[in-house]
Length: 177
Image (cartoon, rainbow, N blue to C red):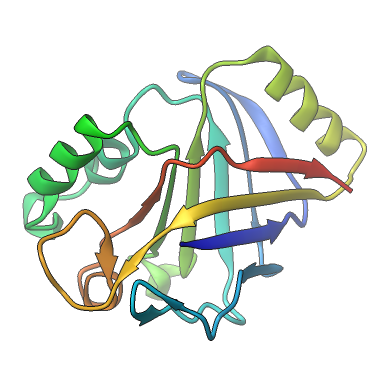
């Protein structure tokens, strides 16, 4: 399994209808080893692109958040398989996906992390933002399949052609620098 690390370049914080959130964009990120094989397949190449990230306390599952605003024709044919897998396992905390609206100025890569409501998380991230420090986000547990098949992980064809997200159920590590 792969890990994804990013270093923030500015943090916007606030409260929305689902509670606390922090967000930003960065071009300072990396996979654990871009040349390493993960389940038989190279990791997607993301070098030089911008990642839009968000940490929040949204109670919806990551799959439901992903599919919420998509028209039916844009949803993956594997939606029911993925929902069933994550319902039996436990819900993923993070989602990584290719941006659909790059031509309209959207980000090429999107990272979303939803955690339980915790006042200490809000205090920690708000202090990082107020002190204008870097927030290092480490997220592990990402899997990519070696071929396009009905399984609960994304393949390269799913990632590049159908904009299917990758999911992780590993608790992210947040560090202040």
